[in-house]
Length: 78
Image (cartoon, rainbow, N blue to C red):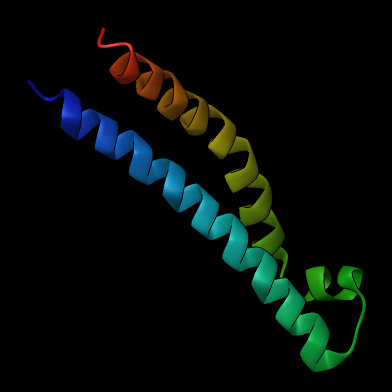
């Protein structure tokens, strides 16, 4: 009975990973534009952003794969 809640949890976790990845990339790009520097200095200025980018990139493969698998299960009515 809790399948829809589980699926929404997994799907929202996937969306959160994509959101974190995207906005950390935007933040690094913004630092590059404001300070007129290269990507390596922008990353050195915000090491937490690169850690979050790596973490979100790895995590999105696991939860994204789980989301796709459950979409397949829903689509085939299993």
